[in-house]
Length: 238
Ligand code: A5P
Image (cartoon, rainbow, N blue to C red; front, side):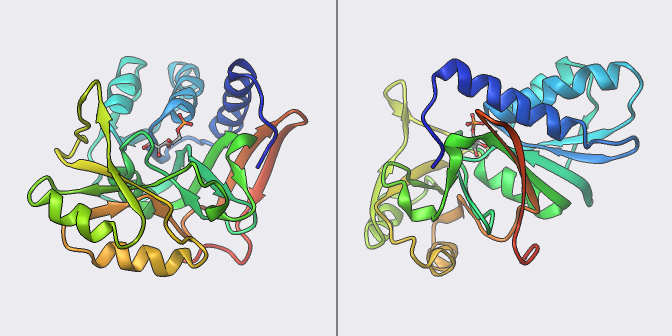
């Protein structure tokens, strides 16, 4: 994991990484927009280029990002075809593989659909997100989007894999853009993250999980020494 920094330093680093990603966007691209603070900095970094004449069409992975992007003059439409590039933040990025945990913002299902549609999926973040192994951050859950129908049963099934906690916001259940719940799965065995991903995918009631394995093609990660570009060893797996 990268060195802990102040909130302000981290924000600056996120901004730097987002600006590097924005510089990779070229005219005519179909672009996927992620969700969360770093993805929003990416949208903000892109806006002046669009105002200056860059032609791109975007798909947003959350209502919040869509609203921001539209308000800044970006053209935002539905996901109905392939994307040239998608750029998104992450909660943890495994050095080497670029496997990631995503979904602390609750947008993981649409984020994964956008990532899968993209030829290139680029992660952006400050270096506090970098880990050697996905499982090393015990404080970090694997977010799992679940249907509200029968949610107690789904949570009971998830409890065989770790300690699920149904996410709350302001004392109420957190509801995703898709109208579902999020169960944050703590303490799961991530030594074989692919096996956990398969198990989660097969669980009835699970809509999607926040393990993004073999999806990212590269990452811009900013730290004290500037921005580092990482590429996925062995290429993309999906
Ligand atoms: C949103 O659902 C998440 O996957 C975000 O991409 C992730 O939480 C990173 O967010 P920040 O860029 O705000 O750290």
